[in-house]
Image 1 (cartoon, each protein chain N blue to C red):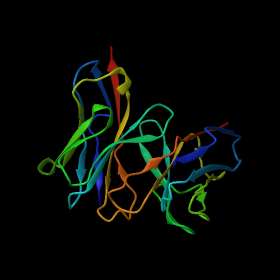
Image 2 (image 1 turned 60 degrees about the vertical axis):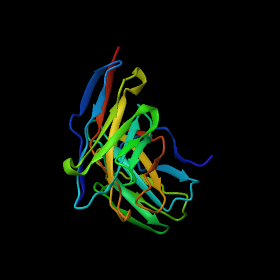
Image 3 (image 1 turned 30 degrees about the vertical axis):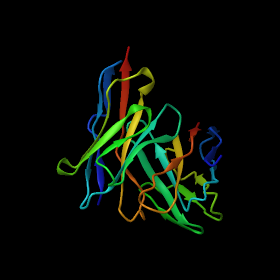
Length: 114
Length: 113
């Protein structure tokens, strides 16, 4: 069965500092991977997705993620944090068939300190 | 514009009453999902449906019911059997194919008093 682990339920960074949110997956074959962002009292919005076309994936709002098969990781990064990046971030994995629901990590809440 | 609409945004109900949350999409997506979100617990899958007139239980289906009579609609009923129904409920849809992620609605916050 597939699973996703997000290390750190809460990450705090200073404005302008590097953002690094960690995601490790467990899957017998390289899966498809997604990062979502959720602002308070809103639904989730897709940030980016890995679909095997390229290991470095660029998303919206300056975020990017790198798929590393050897480390079974798909960490999300942003070079310089903005106050508006404060939100909750979820990593998710899809089976290759797409016939089963996405499996989500428990989320990481990002705080940005001025 | 295509999208997925959840209504109402906020819902208050007395304990022991059934309540139905609406989810409508005009994206022509085949699959639809209901999740429950509680602080610190991430998203937990309640029910999902991949085609009309068919649905499957998720991880926490007890106390909930759904129907899928139309492709566009996937309402969720929170019954009086659900012991702790106060939560944020999210509906999502997805077109066929593993490459596609979910499109989420904006959620319904249910408070039972």
